[in-house]
Length: 131
Image (cartoon, rainbow, N blue to C red):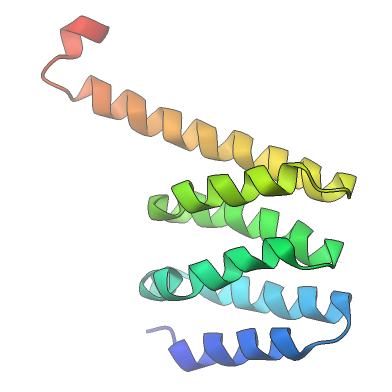
């Protein structure tokens, strides 16, 4: 099982980094830990704090957050609602790479959401109404 202590320790290290690049690199380690299949239970615990990284002054941190949210939503559908609002915030970012990353992530999330809706409609007793 994934170690809660390992994730907490890396997240604390990221908070203490003064350099934006070092903070972004440490957060990438946190993201890699949380995206492992065994870490599903920990995602809910750390996810709200990670979403706060959208307010980080460093563009590399915000850019890596957009990529992480994209990956998290592909693995854990529970992440979609909070990720969507955070990515909408990143769309207005002054840094083009951050905004582009948010657009790409939102496009992928909406494809996932449409797929869920299609499956729900297809398996619905009212299916003949829609198809």
